[in-house]
Length: 371
Image (cartoon, rainbow, N blue to C red):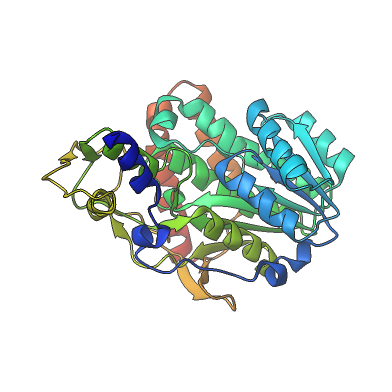
């Protein structure tokens, strides 16, 4: 019975307790009004962020909502929830892989979306270290393909869901998302009729693979709760917050911006662990141990939200800033992709994060010297 009691207590954890701040709330009806009556497409519609995007977009009455995912089960679940539980009858479920250029062109030609939220990505950092080729294909190459298909189909707005791990990337996953941001910026040069933007945020509480469900499992099992480094901090936000930011950013975009959410102060992971243990009715280090297990490959002590050469600029939206940077030469992006793809397909994935970090530095240098 003890175990069940623990589970109940742990489950009642308030998000505010973890964030150390009030969650950001926007008036969705107002900021999402631009989606009403429009044809909207969400890629990665079955993922943690994609599914919540679909739920919130459905609330502002788009003309049609196209759910695209290449994981059959996830797509089935989000369509079932929208249609059967929420009676959103104007949804279309499209089973497709963003890495397939021909298929993407077909989907865009068939559905002609006006607004695209590109949330499809692989995000589990250690898993991507083990599968770097897939990380780059799915996060970077696929973003290039979808962004081009959107431009060719005269989509009005295209929003890339990005991450703070794309800033000065130290992991393959971060590197693949930095490339995705560059791909979107280059697409803005090529397809002037589409407004492209990217949205960067920190760790999303409660998304699959995030630290809270892991700590929760460890507490329920009686511990230990494992932390990789006592100094480690992360920016946290909730899934609804992240999604409200994405929708708001789509409205703010005039073309080529990278938006960043102000997520308050970073949270120390070891404090988060101790808080969760206390909230479950236990004493840290007395009832449940906190064990330091050492950093994982490429794991940073602190995440940054801005690259060198980027400066934050406020927007007229509360809690959203824009990362201002001098324009990127589309030729440079072509060459960057060529260099990375050579490493990926030439079987030298180990060099990948290093190469992207070098490219990031090269970009910052080019920027600061004004070339």
